[in-house]
Length: 39
Image 1 (cartoon, one colour):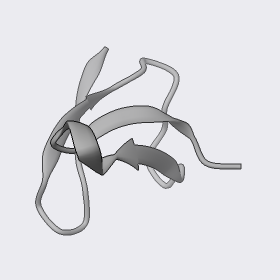
Image 2: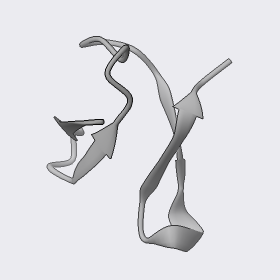
Image 3: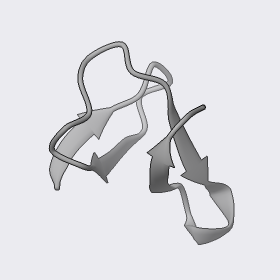
Image 4: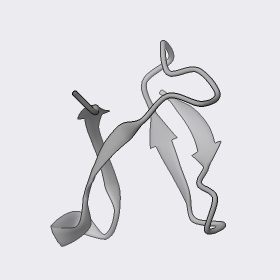
């Protein structure tokens, strides 16, 4: 996992293969945890 910062300033950890500009899914029930790539 590596750190990432969203457009709104929120910081979270994402998988190493996520690149700048990738769309991701976030589980808001877990306080904003990374779920995976968006489809």
